[in-house]
Length: 612
Image (cartoon, rainbow, N blue to C red; front, side):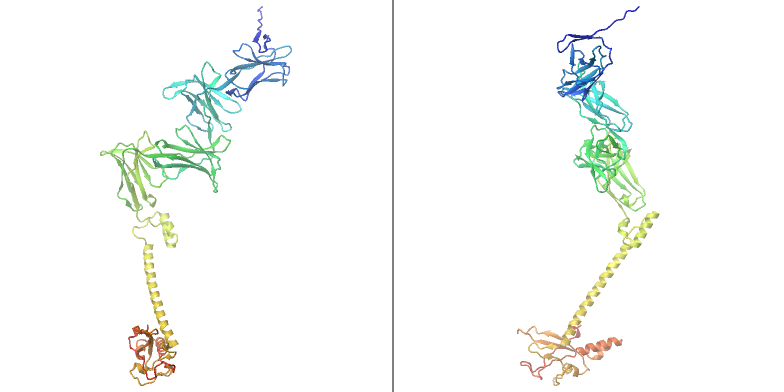
């Protein structure tokens, strides 16, 4: 018969000095042990250790490994089935592995599972987590890297959350990056938060960790609609130029991140909302330097969620002026081409070039790329445009680059401007004219380019302008003639007054014939054989305050007036004008007037000198 061995467990001297506690373990079920708020405790932070057993428990004991006695005991229970052991200030003294027991009046429990209580911040140096990619597609895997220049023997990667999960890896040493360790993580799912911290420790003190690294959050992409990433100017930039990238989406996102390919950090920005229903964020990158080169993408997300949008389309930022050579750019057959023709831009360089790039001024599209070919001592590339349309006109420059640094460019070539002849007729200029609109639509539908030279509507515009100017001149001439004729009629109808008296003046036709014996008569009694035209003329040589006014008389036979008029209506109008002109002087009896025999000085002049 095999003898049975009984093992007696002794815990050593208790803190109360009650001697050694020895008991037979395994009689009662083992309790459960845990720490609140967690088993990884910062330096001098409070922590509580809980031990939960049976309702039959009379007393609980907390035991720390590598300690010669009971760490603590709770003879008076606040709760019947569990007990708590508080640590007000966590230090390296409390770090270690713990077990707890409880006993009833007749037996002891089995020991609980071990609880490893860790204190952080013992070492002032903290490792830095390096991440191959911080944006992870839903269901994907990712590898996290923890690095430190301090010679830690092991690294710990901890995932934050309700349950503190961590993984431990031995460190490796590399001359260029110190000590490091890789942690594969995945697959990641959007329903969980994926935030990590990294710690380092030495193998002889596994419960004493360094300060934590900065938190690292994995963004689970591909769950929501993707935004778009754009730049206001050309993607080819120069050193010192201000650069701003903008992420836009029609989904109402609360925050955006900008990611650069191969970069460790992400740029975070709170989103703004526009009245048009768009959300977006601006990412000012400051003055451009060589380090801004690369490929960028952006993502949108909501607050308090690990779910992020799919990646935007990539945007390449190219920095020019980073190589000492300058290529040349030529246009073949010439800078002025007609729509539908072919044109070739030839970029050449004496220096070695792997790739040539052709950029159009003001275009936000990425430049065209072609591999260089060596011919006749030159590196060159031909950029063909066929067939040419109005969209091809503009200013072009070419650059050179290398395969090893595709985002760094040479100095730009001298700009070349392409002009598309006959392409000035645009829909925006034609919409006001129906014929032009129909003609432009015909070109667009059937692909017919307009003919070279001035367009037909240009001739119409010139002819209309000339006709308008001629009509305006004729109208001005007519108005001047009517105004002068109206003044003459007004003077004759009202009667001419002598400047020194108040009597009316009218002339007898006999004066015009040289007879001074005939007496003046009224207009109604005058002879109708000779019409008179009377105008006033001031004697400029008279120095008196009221200069004499003279009646200038033109005698014109009626036959001469009507001889050139064949129409009866014109003849009647001429006779009316002759009757109106029969005005003579009237000598009143007022003092100062000359006697009736006095003949005022009259002078004969051509009709052009009187009235029109």
